Image (cartoon, rainbow, N blue to C red; front, top):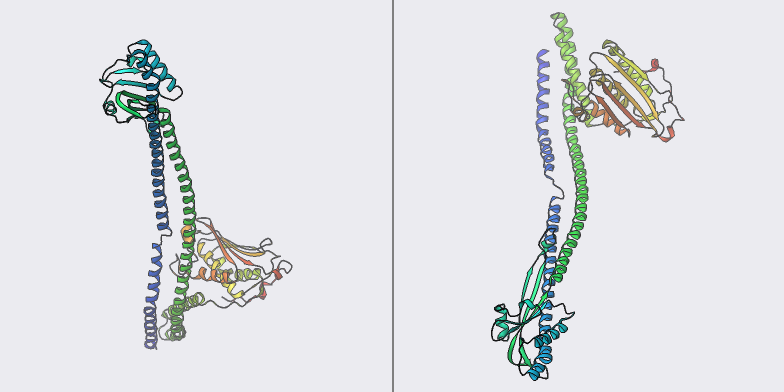
Length: 526
């Protein structure tokens, strides 16, 4: 008989090992697939192109603004130059007609050293320049570089004041020179003032009665125009264009940033939802694989376990007769096979949840039943039980046996959390606003830290030396199948509170209160 028992145990062990090796591959592949999701970076490429495009548009807008303002400056200066040349030509005609011809007829020659001639010429020039925004007019002698006349009297008689432009005009070529100082930085406080002067040089020629310029060059006319105010206006315009461009681009940047941030949040949320769905799908696939494994393993284990247990019980009786005092060896086999049978049942309950068989029942009856079942263990461990049952608790539709399993698992964990004794409070309450009933299990045990509390419903998670870690996972599945939920509060050193919340069907709302059940009528079966 012992040899036969050992042979059966070895046979069962080989079958289990074979099944586990066949199913380990799919589980490992699922684990690798889940790790691939960490590489997701939603919307990063879109953000990069969006902000890069905005930066390029911003730089292009600044460049365009600068080009437009600079072009406006050149156009204005060109028009001022044309205006100065046109004014110089008109001055040439008026001086020749109103001064040169009458002076030659009257005096026979032109001599600006004669004060009368000088005053006459000065009066003519000033009448012509009045209101024309001309800074000064100077006439150079054609024979030598000397100033014969100037609206600035201090310059009259000075030599070598004409430069390269004077020489070009003396040869019959109209030309201009711009002397300016100032830029966009001149708008900054404390910077040097804007300065701009346009000097135009035209040859002073004789003219006929039709106004055509002919004959020899009698001198060179220099017209000086102060354009500082115009340059300041252009620089101010340039600054305003750039400022408006900055404001527009800043607004566009803010709008785009807002769109990108919101889109990024939406994409991240959707990516997170997709990851959660993938995780649930992976979990479902894993559980499906686990269900196949459990079905296969339980099929191979369950019947042999029964045979091993019954054989060990018979063996124990025979050992008691043959070798008294050694029968505890067979008792160990019986105890361990019972534990293995419990583990197999838990695997089956988790992998293949039973269909609900609901009927109208009361949570108060479950609490009374569980209290009777653990009464002896409560007394042995020094645990004081307090029952706070709502006498007006409405009935609900539930699978009484499965909900009893939920309560059993939570109370059993509470017992293990109070090894030195404590207080266990079991209560029920009805929330008429939400139309829900709550079952509360509150212990004064060691409590659960935050890290473990986040994993207590994870299958196979346990911090105990023995156990499968499926108790609370099974309880959560059962409660969710009833349309309810489990809420957990816990603090290390103070205890834990598990609240099972179940909906009350409209037809069973408070008008149909809980039925009082005599504890003596309850069949207590562990």
